[in-house]
Length: 289
Image 1 (cartoon, rainbow, N blue to C red):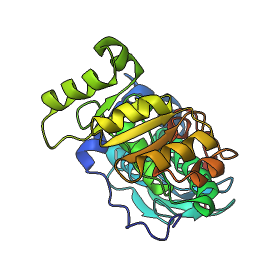
Image 2: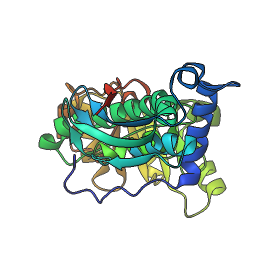
Image 3: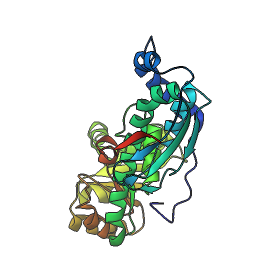
């Protein structure tokens, strides 16, 4: 596992994964199905092989990949050799397959697209976790900058890489950002309106750009503060000001090269949008046994 302290990953409910996979299969198979495979491969032909890593990375998305084959033909036998959260090296099998050749070949691209993409997210997250861990306590968290339709899968991939999840959507937490503050007329009225409207069970986080704004947010009892685009020195000052009264989150241009200094400032969380919106894929391919 990428994070020995993490609990084992539970699979996403099928009702969350299946619509994504069905939509991807429909997009690829269209109105007439797989013209190439149906013309060339006999209906009775069998296929035995494996999805194999072409490069090192962290695996995520095996449930979605397996479902792509199962939806085309339940007779396809799928064995996950490297479960989500596992590290994999070049040449190592991730999923072994055996069954009707037509279904396996027709589902191949959808399964690989999802598996490569989600493993890329997990691998990008793991790179930040590894760079931050020696320098502080901060957890690496994702954002809402996800691929439309893939949020649940990408956020689970972040966990597979040893990270943690920020809010899933606009409906599960309050995050007051700079535009909210501008429209509300300041941090104080924004927090007061949010608290009045959200109810006692909803946490309130406020984005601040300066230490003066942080002081306002703390005075109003914000549960968490997002310290946006602050350098390490200001982050350390902010952590001292907060002094445990709120959760501290650093954000803004976080990379593997900068995350160590950010973690060393003592923040609780470090959020990075690129681990979901710009993570490179991990190269995987389907090989015949």
